[in-house]
Length: 145
Image (cartoon, rainbow, N blue to C red; front, side):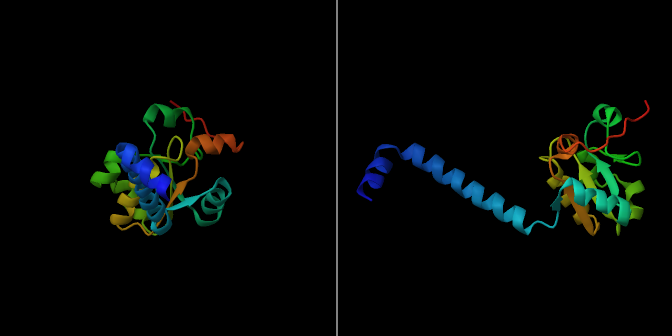
């Protein structure tokens, strides 16, 4: 214990940074655990799409969306439209499962939270995004330009 105290006294900035990172990891872990936006894998997404008529919302830029998406019926929305509530054509699907797809699974949570706040009841984010979908050798749909 003496060595820890000695290290901390000689390296206060390093210790503060380490404690800050530890707190950030703990906070993010609790956010993930208690979030109502659930992370689903490819198989769970397929089940929701095929058995429960899930709506796929692809939040990638239109160029990437047009290049490939996971289903032909996917809707392309940008995160700022979702957060501002500019989603009139999506409102009729509030009771259906919504699967949010992004590039790599890192940007979906805030859009999903915004949908929950707007009254959507079942919001999911695809683990790994379109990249994880492709890596899982899942089929993609090329959009017509």
